[in-house]
Amino acid sequence: MKILLMLVIMRIGYGRHRHQNYEQKEATRLENEAMSLNEASLRPSGFEYSGGGPRHGQLATLYENYNEAPLFDHWDGYAIHYERHFPRPCTSKKGLQCEPIKMLEIGVQSGGSTRVWKKYYGDQLHYVGIDINPKCKRSESLDENIFIKIGSQTDAAFIHKICQKHGPFDVVIDDGGHTFNMINATLHTIFPSNTCMRTHSVYAIEDLHTQLMCDLTLPQSEQPYCQNSNQFAHLLTQLYYSMFYYWSSHSHTGAHQNSERPPHPVWGKHVLGLHFYDSLLFIIRGESRPLVRIQRGYDRIPYS
Image (cartoon, rainbow, N blue to C red; front, side, top):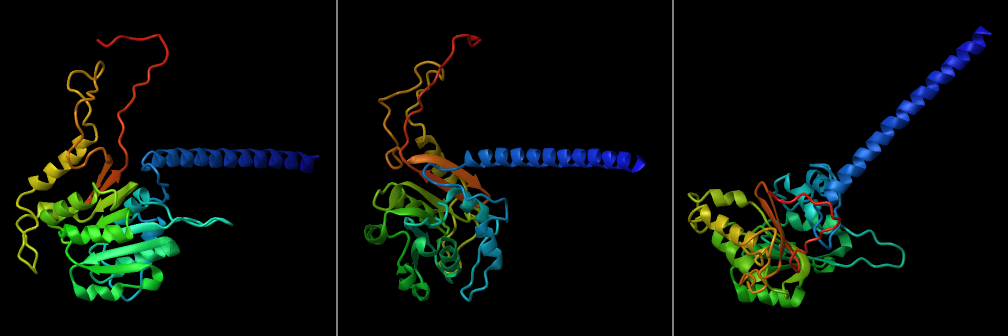
């Protein structure tokens, strides 16, 4: 009888333990789902979020485990932001072919990034790199759809020729000379152009801490990174305001839209979003449309 009673008590304890484990697992599952929903809200239109926390995503792993000969020189914190805003690598399903990812990267240098992006996107990648140094041509690999073009990022005719042959691009990365003049000229050439960028695409600018280093100059040309830090701030302000050019200043509750107000003369209606991180900016490109106000229900507390 005592043995039977002990077995019953053990069974009850085991049942409670299983129930506690189930509750813990269920709480963890719900927490993970909530995090996924929160992360999905950061997803640009037309792109999938590939997940992963800081330093633990697929691209971050490629950064940390890189061991090929061409030097890879990057800031580790960039990886998770690229995974958040860039198109997710496609996993080909039976009978379906993955769409190519067309990438334009300004600044090739030693060529390490060509190897990282190739590993990340695999056969899906169609990569074009631009650099002013003819030695960078060594990173070209036509069999892998990796093309290296030698020329200046400030040469609009050179850029447009590349766009006509290889574009429009899904992703553009400016990791070039990092001076404001270079950043500004390249952005003005590429971003407004439907030949250079797809309707839904992403433009990334790296190493923007240089825009706080206006007293420093490029060693090879003695050209300063910027005249003053307000230059880039002014550019960013233009991009920001171009997103809601149609709003009137009269009221946020009444006639708040002004159909006669024209879009920005350069950025037009193309800026869907701006995502700013330490030294890194993503400009989300798309077809911007005015917000439409939705009101449902009838029991209302008036504005005071």
